[in-house]
Image (cartoon, rainbow, N blue to C red; front, top):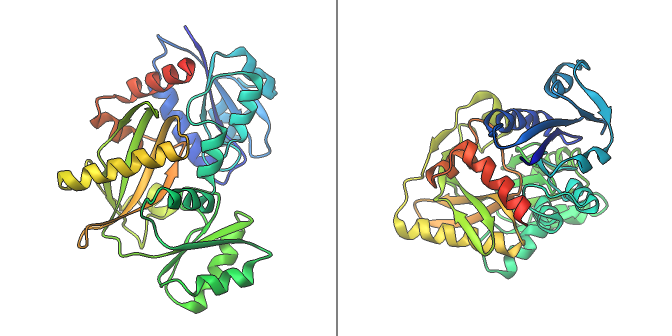
Length: 330
């Protein structure tokens, strides 16, 4: 049986979400087919191994864990990173595992680092003529010129950290006087900020992709109507006001178009293993725009990725098994 390490936690602002996702993966992984171990990374970047890893990160309980180093990965046949955001989803852990020669679930360094940076992702997708909002991105040093470029876009605007997820640090800006404050907030989470032109969105659509560019399973889109102005962190994980439609109620032609865009996007970034590709949809105009590509999508019990894969015939357990098989085969 392959020895699998589920690694989670990390130094990202999405540390807590990583724990929730990892619990779901641990609960649903087939333990008759895999020898499973838990590896926790603290917010300080310390590595621990042991059955008490969840208690360590949630309560600081160091019983049933042992401090270790990244060399521990050499003891496993495959690693399942459940690390959302920087230092986990950006190619960092992937580069370490490649250096150690250990197979791992999900995208490689290339796709991970590209997709983690919203601006670079948009630059690449523009070459593939995949529709998306108008945008600009800039560093702290280029803030003033960035504001000037942002004001040439149509309001409302969405201001985001270039590298981040779970809607952390994102603001919807409706007026010019709100812009700088929103940019400063985004800079608290990253040293680059992207400002995107808001489009009229009746719902957000998400597509789950599984496999390799030559052998892809692409789900029909799932729909969500946010309970807030947009799909905020609070709406995702605290208030739960969002209305989900799985699958989304769309005509066949629109579904096929969205799936084709998702396939093109996944191949454009050299994706592998898995991704959740998000779209903005104006139902009245039948207008589609890609929003972002998530290379380590949420794996909580309410997350869209496993729910969409279920439509494609994969139970949560089967999905995890398939992802591990893809990692080992590659």
